[in-house]
Amino acid sequence: MSGGNWVVGITGASGAVYGVRLCQVMLDQGLDVHLIVTEAGWRVLHDEMGWQASKRKEMLQEHFGGRAGSFEHHPIADIGATVASGSFRTKGMVVIPCSMGTLSGIAHGSSDNLLERTADVMLKEGRKLILVPRETPLHAIHLENMLTLSRMGVRMIPAMPAFYHRPSSIEEMVDFLVGKVLDSMDIEHSLYRRWGDNDE
Image 1 (tube, rainbow, N blue to C red):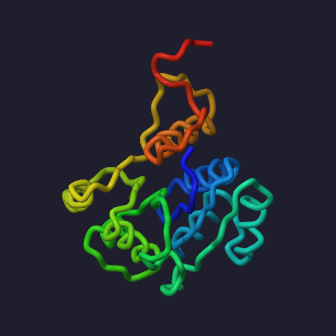
Image 2: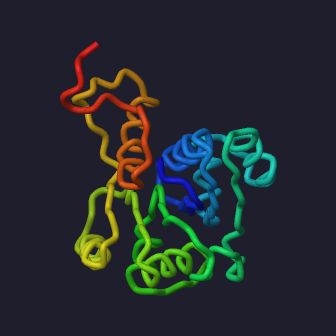
């Protein structure tokens, strides 16, 4: 298992459950999570998962507290947070889900907020950067931005479910995608049945 600090970003794309589930699995494994949520991300957490955006601290504690690992929330406007510096050691960063706006900002080095700045740090320091884009259909600008980042070594894991493991619930479909992300992070897990594993 790969330990150390990891940064997780949650943006305003649909699929907030992916980011929440990833954080929970990582924390349950004793990993340390530095969480950044965009303002649009908080809106989606409210709309899709019923989180009360006016009680952010309470929501984070309810869903991430009391687990084996530690988590720290960094407000999106805190450009001076630890994760904004290359001297702060991390294993890497996952943006899950990643909106096309955030993906564009990262691709063009905007660094307009803490999430984009932290992703820029991952690029300049040569650390793992994994994006989980969630949009459809995709137009040429989306695809060009993804290609730009892919050529820089960024791992693209679109939020696409698989069905060979015969999921019987939304939770199992979420776990498949989260498991694919964990694979790219070199973190062991048993969230889904792999191709070639014996059927039940």
